[in-house]
Amino acid sequence: MSSGGVVCVGCSLPASLQCPKCLSLGLPPAVSSFCTQECFKKNWASHKAIHKLAKASSKGNSEELADGWGYAIDRGSRRTATMPAFPYPGALRPAHVGPTRSVPANVVKTDYALTGIPVSEEESRQQRIVPVRTEEEIARLRAVCRLGREVIDAAHRAVKPGVTTDEIDRVVHEVTVAGGGYPSPLNYYNFPKSCCTSVNEIICHGIPDKRPLEEGDIVNVDISVYRDGMHADLNETFVVGDNDKVSDEAKQIVLTAYQCLFKAISLVKPGVRFRDFGDAIQSVANRKGLGVTRTYCGHGIGELFHCAPNIPHYAKNKAIGAAKVGHVFTIEPMINGKSWRDVMWPDGWTASTEDGRLSAQFEHTILVTEDGYELLTGRTPESPPLWWEKSKEEGGLGLFGDLEGVMNLL
Image (tube, rainbow, N blue to C red; front, side):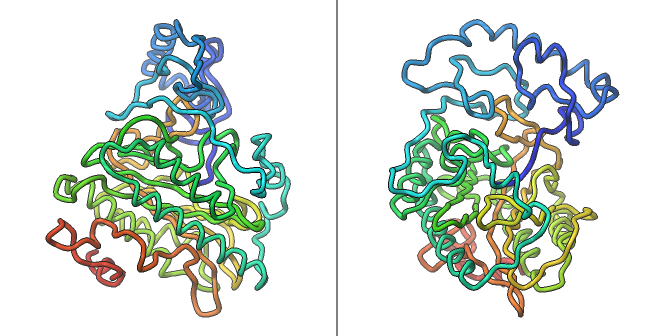
């Protein structure tokens, strides 16, 4: 799960001003925030259309939802009977989101499991200082990352045409708690589900819902697990259905996102600057004419879900610091079909490409070692194959486990 905040509707910069009319209509910050008065005025002509849509759909928003299923609003904490009014950039639309799943009493939970607020994370000095992990901490991180790998592989096996993303969330939830873990996204700032499922043009933080996956879709499943006082974080993007029924554009953007990640990972060693990863990622994306999302970044991880360092994925960023032995962080580039800009859906979590083009992402949790790195969430021989790892007869490239072969395709 990536770190990020409220951004301007007009230009995607950090935003703190809200449209007065949107406030009176009760629209969330995700669709009503602007960085400056000038940006607000510049975008008024297109923005005011949201007000008409909101008024038209307001009837029925107070309808009782007896079964707990509805469209997610207010950062996922509430449901409404009517789809929120919004100029969705692509073809995808939200579907009903179900009730939050329960966690057994014997599973040790995060401090935000009940309140929705990660107080320890907000108050920790680890937001400013990157911790150097002890051997004991590294052992716990390795163990929880192995559980994270088991969970995402189970989710991958569940990805099929006709399967809903809510069903994938159920699999993730049950495998996580069966392994003694707590699903880290659950109630993190009120996120209502146990994983993120981002379909087609969704960049990240998609909320699992009732929409069935369709042949030819791509879906990113973002897994985070908490156990023994440590978090693990990883994600992968899968094609849905037979390879030969998935567009070349979809397959190539998924492959490129993987190449971007491993181009950055290849640099990891003591002394490398955190800002350098973005240059490597951008160089691969530019070669393919693709965009790199700037709103969300990689992050430190351990006792806290998100902490220092920040790892931007775009070139010429201003990230501070350099890697040291014992640092643990994620790299998780989000690669878009064209524009790097994103648009937030009214649920306050789901980030879409601004132009409705596809987006793909891969993520690993990485330990810096004396001679390079250790991939704590790495794939195993038991992991289901990604599209290019399948045989040529199945529409793949026959490159199972062949990272060098995959990178040579650049």
